[in-house]
Length: 366
Image (tube, rainbow, N blue to C red; front, side):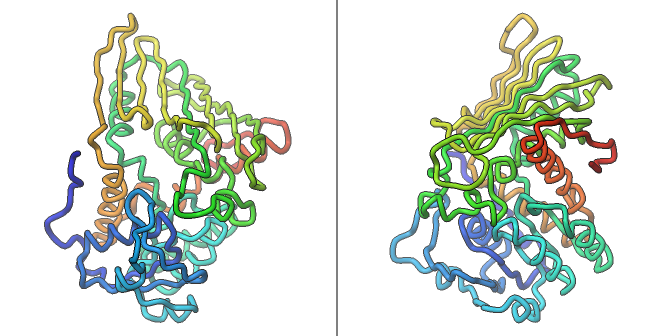
């Protein structure tokens, strides 16, 4: 298997202390990566509530006999304000999404740069305030959508920019995976994705597809969605979302995108198919490949990503973020950009509830 690319030099010498708020599966992944990128001298603090100490590996399995806090030399705080008084350079907001905004605003006011796990929040309340505070403090706020760093997505984006399949006629995006298999180390019913109060549900928690569709085609004009809880999984959130989203095509006309999200599909399936007048593009994360066909169904490209390490996209996004912090430059997915995918996801939920299409203005405001 291909080894993960690791930088040979310290990326962000100004980052000497970080604070983690949330050390579940994704929080521990970012902790492993920031240690790898910035070295053992980095001071790591954490504001913790549950105080669970199981150490997870890259496959989200518990490492027997290891203690998370001891292994990574984490100094733990029971009070967020006390942790912020230590003046962390970066705060990683990796707790349940309904708790993101309160932590992010307090951290921004304390002068920290922010690495916020997707989705930005579970509502738009406080988003503009957070963006304004970051601007006033001259700090970087970044929303983590690591699929934007995946070589398959970059290949798809480049092919569309090069007009590789001519005028785009149709797009189908799908993400389906069995929720109890997400985190082998915990009961799925405890996960934020399974709980409405924590900002869960398939439409919000499986938001990567919504983000990359916006990255490719901009904010949509309108959307209609049907969904809700259909399976026998024990949760109080939507486990199916089936949506039609109307974008403006790259050529200026209408582009209708089909988006499917579910929490019960086995085996997992994740792909994006683009149909154009002169060919077809397919980026499949489940098959780990990118393919391009001509209009007569001749296979023109077949790129295999089987050896691409899953963690590499996470490393690349963190490297990019630290570069923005060091240069004090605006990231590609700042708070306002991260709010676009949230705005669309909330629009889909509104459509599911009302039974009507939801319209969006061109500037991204509903």
